[in-house]
Image 1 (cartoon, rainbow, N blue to C red):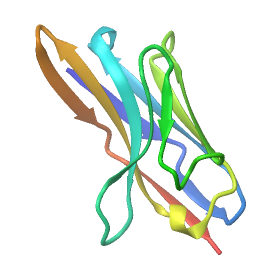
Image 2 (image 1 turned 180 degrees about the vertical axis):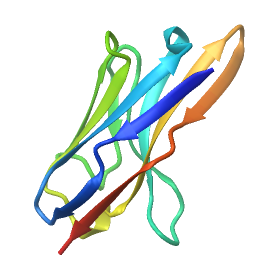
Image 3 (image 1 turned 135 degrees about the vertical axis):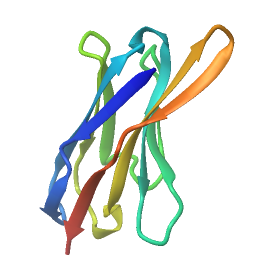
Length: 119
């Protein structure tokens, strides 16, 4: 089992910055890709950014150049640095981790953290 706890959300004005953190605990040794997703009211959950255990990153087009995902494997923590925030970035942000153990794939979610960007 893997437990994920997000922190760092809040209210910020457009153009501001926030840094989200996701602390993982439990069977972290077998975690592969981790990612940040978000879900705005009335919309589907979407992938914002992902990072592999080797450090390869990918981003949604809407956040490229503004958001940076990183991972500190020694601290079992993933981060999302969000700059130049826009009102459209308002959503609940969820941490996700994929793990493979003995040929079985598992996926885990955090409880979510609210990000609100005011215009």
